[in-house]
Structure formats: C-alpha cells, structure tokens
Length: 250
Image 1 (tube, rainbow, N blue to C red):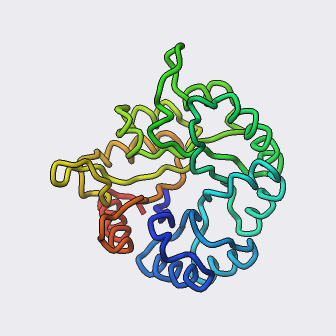
Image 2 (image 1 turned 90 degrees about the vertical axis):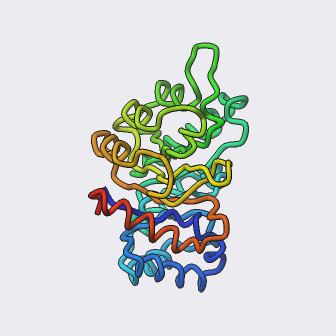
C-alpha cells in the first residue's frame, strides 16, 4: 500500500495553480509519493498531469465536483485519465440517509458511465451514513449490498467510522474488495474534547487498521486532517507519514 496526502488537509494552500504547484512540491519534499486531489482550485487534467510528473507524484483519487459527476460522468472519467487517476471520489452527499433513493437515482447511472470508461466511482463517508434503516443496515451497507463492485467502491474514513460508534477495523474487513482507498487520521482527547489528530498522536489502533487494509485489498492510505487546530498542516502530514512508516508502510 502507498501512503498519500489528502490535499484537503492543506486546502488553504491550493486555491490557485501557483499555490497548487508550490504545495505539490512541499508534499513531495516531505516524502509522499501520491496525493488525493480535493478542495483545490479548478485544474486542467493535462496541466495537472505535468505538475504531478514534475514532482514525481501520483494522483490516487479525487474528490471531484458533484455536479460534474452527475451531469457529465463521461467527461469526468476522460479528464481523470489525463492525469492517470482511476478513482473518481465523491466527498459527501447531504442528508444521504433521508435521501438515499434520490442519491441512487442521481449517481448510480453516473457511476455506470464512469465504469464503462475504465474508472471507478468511490463514495466517502462521514458519520451520518451510520444511521440505521428499519432493516438494521446503514447507508453504506445498503450501497454495498445493492451495487456491483465494478460500479461502486468506497473510501472509508476511519475517524468518522469510529466517531459514529462503529469499529473501523470491522468495517474495512466487511467491505473487503470494495475499498481501494482509505482515509487515516487519529482521534484523541484534548482538554476534554474529542479531536482529529495526526496519525500516531491519538488513540486509534493503526496497526490493526493497516493489517485490515492489507487483507482487504486497499491500495492507498491517505492521511487527512479536516482541522489541525492551528498546527501547520504540512507538519501534521509529515508526522503522520513518519508514524505510518514506523509501522511498516512505505
């Protein structure tokens, strides 16, 4: 598995192409070999490919414009091919529990078009997806059971799974074969409050998480922090990378 940087962590520094290039250079200097494109400025696929190549980086996955995914999935897939990215990610869908059928009608047709062009649509969770339907399943379990692995995959966010009261290790094993990418961040208590922390700074069991990911066919572990609480986000990414390497990831 490769360790990547989720650029959402450093989104303040990617809001122009000049900033994005500088940030990609910093990410490469830290030691990452891949990134997730998320919350950056708009980019042209060919220009992004050149930037990634300049710094020896690979794009593992995106969080792409939801409207473009829904309205023109063929274009989205072809654009991803320009920078050699197979995985098209959706970062969230507001009120997905209440609007589950609407989500399916809006995005599964798009997902099929994306798959037909050699890419794969991935859905990223927060904690809202773990509310249960009357049959005892949650949103993610229903999507898994009601779709083909060739059409839909998942980006499990281990922090948000644990935040919802579920076990991220069990989740990853239950979704084996459907999770090419996973988000790692740590969870800890600071001043009596639950916080996101750099990997290795909190209480999550990353050794068990890494083993579950390896057994489940995961290709990319993406380090992400939605909030660094005033710490330099590049420092947070660097410390997380160092910690995961100490556990045997490359």
